[in-house]
Length: 410
Ligand code: PLP
Image 1 (spheres, rainbow, N blue to C red):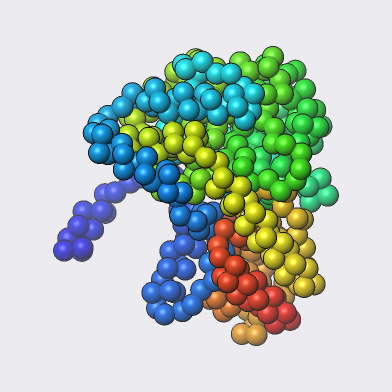
Image 2: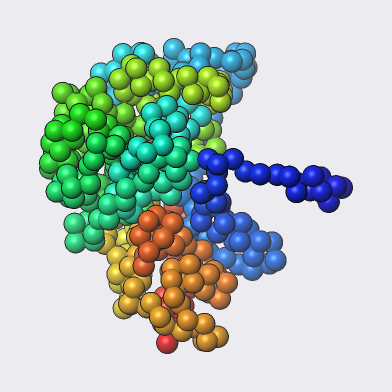
């Protein structure tokens, strides 16, 4: 039966848009990890960017109430009045940004909003500036649009934050967007007011450049200085800033698929045009749950933060026992970005030489039983990403395996 289905695939031809995009490194690692587990291997999973907590009960209850009340139909394309006003209140309460209703769109996950915003604005030849390390999907989405990714490397000595002078040099008449994700997946960098200000000054001088702020990890910051987002810092630039956020990470709601964005009306209208011919409205039940998440008690986000802080301390203390690995302490998120370049060219006990970070990840997965993501997936070879969104027991096991695996290299 399977063969019969595949027999027609000889004429299958992917679109040009897909030609540069393969399955992401994380998808490959997830599949390899699942296969090893299926074979009975015990793998410490440290590759997934997904909180291991359950969605808080009040949010689950709101979804059940919505189903019982018959909220099971299509809603307005950009979200129900209830979720849109919850998003408005959130932006105003937490970020001091005041968006009108037509400046807000709610969709099936923040990723769909990133995709739609790029789809709505990019043409072949346009450029998007991504400070590296960057989240895997940005570059792939931009390339799917036929636009060009301009990678700006950042450095551990700058806590992986973009320098304004590097940005200034990279801007051309074709630059359409600068995208900054703070707190950053995978580096854990958190841009403070003083970090954003010189960057926004550069943006102000180049009217063709728009700013996309991906604030997905807003609630996971370990420093005392409060979270800031560009739209609250430069009201004069509000006409070209898109602020993207969502409930996936903040409320352990990855499976509910709700993201939201605020920005200038013409851009939001263009994003809605993309959504109207792709996902249509987001899930009605998930919208009711997300409204409760944004409006209800926020105690769970504080509890998660305490947990992440303890896990970060555990991971950093374990890493400090690995003489060949270097990591900057993450200021936010649940990721640590580790420099393993001191081990480049080392050999495993089976005689395999580690020539790049794909090799290291394969070695740690197949020989040592721990899954991580190579830095090259984030545009930064020589590093790997550890996720500490898993239980303390799993982290202890994974970190011990990384330590022993690295110590065994010659
Ligand atoms: N932005 C960043 C930086 C992420 O890490 C993720 C998910 O991993 C997303 C956006 C997508 O979030 P969502 O689940 O809302 O699509």
